[in-house]
Image (cartoon, rainbow, N blue to C red; front, side, top):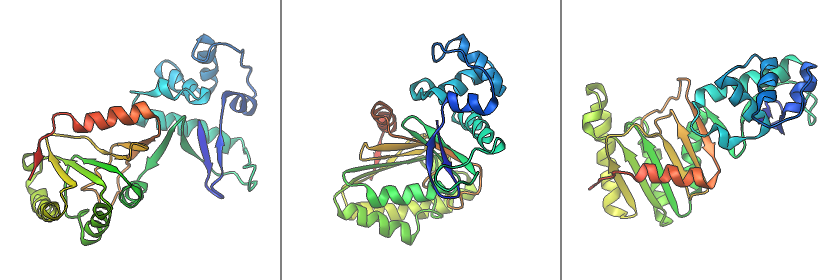
Length: 257
């Protein structure tokens, strides 16, 4: 698994050998996800399904974690990272002790307000194709600044697909913001045919950027402006995962004019 020093930004890979040495436990070598690994996970206080996740994180087994509850994966990653801090494992770059769980093989963790930066980076840096999926749509996000950035992206002839729920899925208190945002996007759509507005009954939340990476999790990219809640997503760089997410976004889609 990957951790980051919050003092200098240095990224470090943490494996079972390092944790074993910090805990002072004995790890018998064996299959990455065999009974031996369960015994090792017991040193960390993880059993059952949690032991599988803990072992996969430390073995670099990103594929094993596919389909697992991301929130649980993050909690376990945070607990393992806490061992580094409690055992005073110093950063090799700056010598300080302040580690944070970053992710695992071909996956990074996106938290809280970092989602807003991911959204703007996706709009700014995409070159061929951009998907933005959100359970809801709101003028809180579709602001003048957002529309300006989106238009710059469209001018580069990027194919942009915005995927969000229709009016029936928005509560009364959300309706004004929804209709205002939809009006602005439809006006932009008239000028740029490479912008596609896709409305369907969806709770999908994520980004796909040029099929280079994808972000998927709990954050509503087109409606959540403050990002004050405990939001978590996975930033995926694995080709098969990106392909599957792109396919899911496009499933049962009915474009709107």
